[in-house]
Image (cartoon, rainbow, N blue to C red; front, side, top):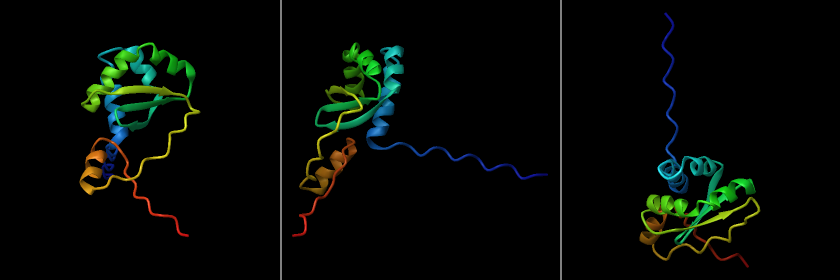
Length: 126
């Protein structure tokens, strides 16, 4: 008899911002399945302080989500565990450069737990 096929590997769990985004899209179902469908066409761009930035390839999808922004803000705030604002952007959006890395490793760990990406910058060689 032929050996049984190996079980398929489970997909790796998403981390950071992507995991939070998946949670937001899942939770949106309780507010509006239509808005949930529109959010599926979006993607998380960044979290800057208390602002969650969502990007859309098509203006139509962004405009549809704008019509229910209060529900989106509520879903984002619930997923993030704190009051948030939401900015919806198009494909032409270019995020500003990241801020300098936090001064302490403890602060960096806290920021990363919230989905931030800490970067250490070194002075340019002269």
